Length: 241
Image 1 (cartoon, rainbow, N blue to C red):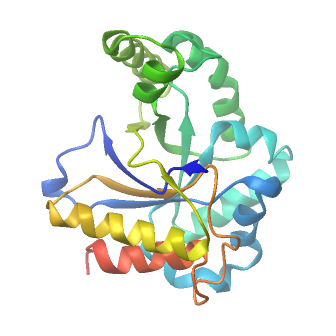
Image 2 (image 1 turned 90 degrees about the horizontal axis):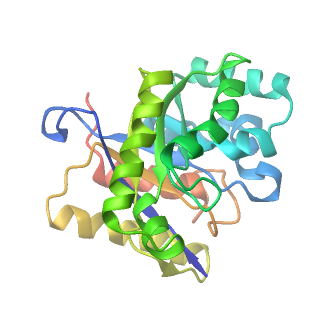
């Protein structure tokens, strides 16, 4: 089974990482009707340290509609996130088989974004979901096409949501997942590999959209999702005192 483990997301419009500390994003798996995401709000005491080490909690824009169909639930989620001082981010398309151009993709996504804002949500940033991989391997388009349509997508976002930060996700790497310990070991190794080449990203994004630990909390148990985020942030992310 292939899946993204750790993504280094370099934003398009942010200042150099040399002059600011990197953010940490956490995107729990959304399978089983968002069970892991909901566990964060049902058991806040079970990931208090992890929460103090991250900046952005995120999911896909599609899941805000597919899983969180109740505006009252979304309102409670956003209210709690504000109390925790966590920002909300979304993973989005830029070009997809269902949106072959940047403009078409954005037009289909915008209603989902508007709905997030309706119950009081504020979209801090978006992460474009693999436009290069999609263009090359799914749409069979040239890199020039991908670049142009991704730029068109960004232009649409800027026109309608001028304050949203924009980033790009590309797979690093696609690997097989065996069990929860494999997940944990893999993201820690990727952290070491990136540190070895003195990488300085704007954000560290830890997520999986296919396979991930079976449990999101507690952070004190072995190999849970929040434990992996906590230990990665402890080891590789320098936080301001």
